[in-house]
Length: 177
Image 1 (tube, helix red, strand yellow):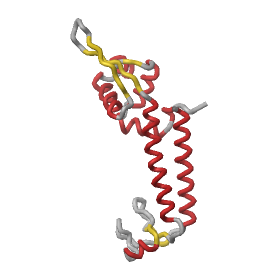
Image 2 (cartoon, rainbow, N blue to C red):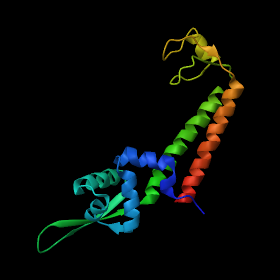
Image 3 (tube, rainbow, N blue to C red):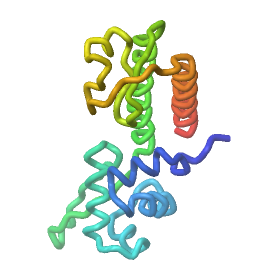
């Protein structure tokens, strides 16, 4: 049986970054209400203002995750919106991001394959092959610190581990769809 989509940390982080602090609670409430719902129902269940729920829905709509149907009340002239969440779109976005990251990691791994690598040790700086390090007189082009030799085998093993981790995450996300 596949893992519930909302239980993935990457999905939680994505929803919070995309739709704000109430996004996870919103998704849980929406799931209980069913496939189609209106913003007033969600606001009542979440004990939030309707405008706060509409903000969440608008942010999700911008990413193609929420969609709506607009109907007009002929007596009052007011519009009402019936919303629907496309959970498959969340998976599509995250899989695209992870596949891009995977491609970049594999490309980087191939670029440094067979090279002696040098690094300054700062977290935001990257390892450089000998030829590039020599061009910079063994000074980091990002922070200016001295570049030191890196255990290339250890780095490759770590890259392989990260690649496998991302491949597994992509597989798990697709199964949770």
